[in-house]
Length: 412
View (spheres, helix red, strand yellow):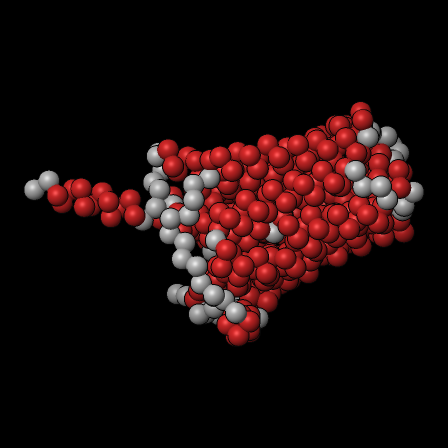
């Protein structure tokens, strides 16, 4: 009579760590810290763009390469990191990624020339790819199915906090001590987070290594690129992220110029609106569960466009309000699109991991390409040029969301 409950408990535990257990808390804390480190290091130069332009004697457009080369390196490496994790394991790749990223971040602070800094930032993106490539796979494998959505939300919260923290910390330190100390502070934050992950992250229990060779990857990729709806979602991710990063790349130059004349530290405080992105993503997801992704995605684009338009007046309150709306709207679009990709892929018999990798690849390529174009837009037309670029990209994304409304669903 006593064996049955024990068996049930063992079987239930075998499904993964449940919420409320010590191991569940270790997993969530570790992935939260890893998300903070990854996105703090990824965006560590964004608040420093005006300082980098002055110190290295490069144009505003050229300074944005310090971020663009990192995101393009990350995007390309994502296509390799996912399959690589099937061989080397999830936790091993996470530890390798965070450790290497911290070393490269410290080297960035010591870069003797502009071109060396760019080379190191490119390498930074490559080594950072290990975490986003495997984080959701690790959570899905190691946690109980009833906790997946909650844990994924906390991981995304860590990435958002990391993006905000990296910008705030480097902006504040950069104003007081210069860009080298600012990047050093980001490296220190990455080191602390990497140590937390090293100590706390449980080893994989359910991972089964598999050999994924080129012959298997080619047909998987062909299927992931054969559905017009998936292609539209990849393009939405690229355009929406491009619009978002364009504004944030130009923001430092705008706030340093007349009539604001803000220093790096004061200008970086605008990034405090970033938590609105978490709210937008959460609320957008809940509304999408009720009325559908096809209805919510265009609304997110409209909200983002409205936010961009609000930044046109030379008024700091309007600027902050506009950036806040843009952030909320962007995360609505990104949250809906990134969740739509695996759902559409699964319904169409496409490997969800492969489709998700293509979405993230497009997302970061959009960040890299349009982030650099934003620097040119600022050089040519000032803030009006940046706003026009962002609005045009959001217009394309919005048009694609409307096109998807007429695309037949693969699920009922």
